[in-house]
Length: 503
Ligand code: BGC
Image (cartoon, rainbow, N blue to C red):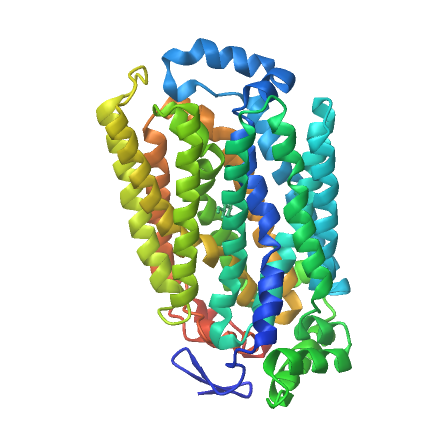
């Protein structure tokens, strides 16, 4: 089947845009480092909020409560103030990710990555030097604004830059660097936990990943699609020659980009209105459902509170951090697995396999907790069972690492036509942050009240999202961005919504 100048056959693309050049690898590698700051923040917050000197300075009541609540492991750290500190970042991120849609369209993906990095840098400096709660919260708001920008711009950048045939692999780089950020933060926490002002180091060192990614972003050029969108045809052509190879015929791809950009320009609509048109219903549903479900896998509960959780289930404070590091490394390894198979086995396969794996693990964790500490939460579970919980969580983290982790950034960045791509990605990031906020705000209370049932809650959501993927997510592997309409046209349910002229 010939679509928009590309030969598309059963999900495989023939010929154009399939070549991997050194330039595209380096460019995407550098761009993917933008994931570092998001990951660093996720990894650092959980550890810092269990450091006694930090709690003593900013949240003394939490420390008192933790000492008193020793009898009930499910409720040790249940504090709204503490979770508000962690999740204030997500509210700021939500606002900036929505704003980022207009900014990336007007100024390009790359420039917004730079802005995000600088904002995050400022937040890290304020947090490292925080003298009171106000500074702490201000710092976190700046961090949030920063990740809102980078999380919106980077996945779109990667999907537009990558050769269509390998788009999945290139895009997983973003999640890979999120994972590196998480693990480095966990290691740093492990070292700083022993120092009385260690929390300052942990928070201030967020400047390091921010500096790395900002410098990196300054060195790369914007995507051909974004350059065409902004009317910079000569630069777009040069960018295409660099990433596709000087000896490649880039004219068909350039022509496709110009065609998409003309459709976008002719429409002259407000993208936040366009995206609600009936023909974009499938896209809109995915951009909301995918990040919504990603969070309901329960991953952040594990990531933010892994140290808390492990302490709660009987590990000492040192071993709790080590356990979190192990979990992070497993997650990292599994992202590499995703990179190597996502363009061969496809997105659906990974989503379904990962879903089944995560479901079984959550049910198993719930069963172990039910069998050992029951609902009272007063009985410490034995070392052996604690290790079993850790092993189960590792298998769970691996499942997430090759499915909902990377693919939740990939899908929203690849399904939209150019004119509403930044808007779609913004909605997706905003939903991600909103749901993260609600869940992190409620998890510790939920753990305290539902006990092991909290894990069954997530298991049920995982079952539901896996069924959703089976029924509604079309396979997008190998399809060029500008020809993506075919996946909806062929889909048993979504075909009734699409309009052939919309790409
Ligand atoms: C998610 C984050 C999560 C992280 C874990 C990301 O894809 O969006 O919420 O904390 O993966 O590594």
